[in-house]
Length: 209
Length: 296
Image 1 (tube, each protein chain N blue to C red):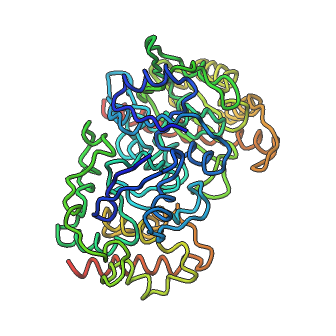
Image 2 (cartoon, chains in turn blue, orange):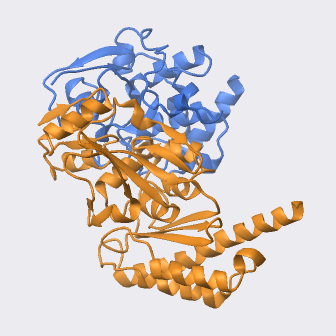
């Protein structure tokens, strides 16, 4: 089957997709975006984490057909995504608006309704696809500066998850960070440097405001 | 394999009627694992993501109508007051990424004895709204689980919503696992006080072929609370009563030894969780009762 969706701001078309195929497989094997990692294929490790209409999900557990018409952000597009967010007052997709702390409404309950797509059409060129040549996002820079990357396999998923947490919660406590990253396994670092990196990104984010 | 993408609930029912073997997929957190690991090759996948109705909930007078696909994250954020037991249970589900996708409909559809939502639903009291082209019906939660990973759904039926009684008293949920995130319950326990009817309801997970209530324990406790006038005097529950309740909850288990734990550990742990959740909820009830008296 054919699947049309938006990846890192660009419309994509994947052909000959098997009906049982995961979004992760489509990203890596059909669209040439190997940033999202394939490890457990059961949602256990978080290394395939991407944003689906703004929401962090394990792309290995999303059926390819389910993303038809929707927006995906992968680690390759994270820098551009963060840049757009900074330029649009803290929300790159508009999705954070639907995640309101303002109480329940039926609109709030609608998950998966494509957001305004503020950034969707704006991205350009090769950079948003490969991530090459683009300035790093604050969370990526913080991971490097804090030494939070060892083998690097878990890093893309952690970056996407941590970036989303900082978008929702600019001043996280350690408990907030641990909970937000609880779905991402790292077997090298012991997590301490990762905690440092997220604290660092949060602190820098605070300074910038 | 065929991928069916109904745009409306009616289309979904028609598709399920035409292809009864079609496997519904919403959050995909169970179904995709089975497909990724080649454990399952369904002829048809029935994608429910486009049906907005399934992602909505309504808070009614006595109950909450929770759409089958409302993600656990939403339950935690928005329904803590109305459904405290389920909100606590939702928070123990896997990880943020999984809670963003999975919902109670999937838990019910899979009907695993280890599903995190089940003990909370059993304790609160709930009905599952299912529908087919033949019509709609509500299945009481006590009749929903029929065997290991089996439920009362007919082949052409889909789960549309769950009607869960709004809390009329404190509720608690407890789960045993090796860590906080990403664990399948070794066993789990839900408890709800219902001061309006002066009853206590329970739910046990992962300690029997299906999620079960500890009915003998409930009956014992209901009688003991009534007899001692506890609902009115708000006294601390006598330790011997709490112990007897815990023992009866253990006795309600019919567990197996498996990789996550032994049968005897499960029985033991359920007793501990029963005693603790009873203490927590009762303390909360006493606190509220005292507060009300003070105001009056």
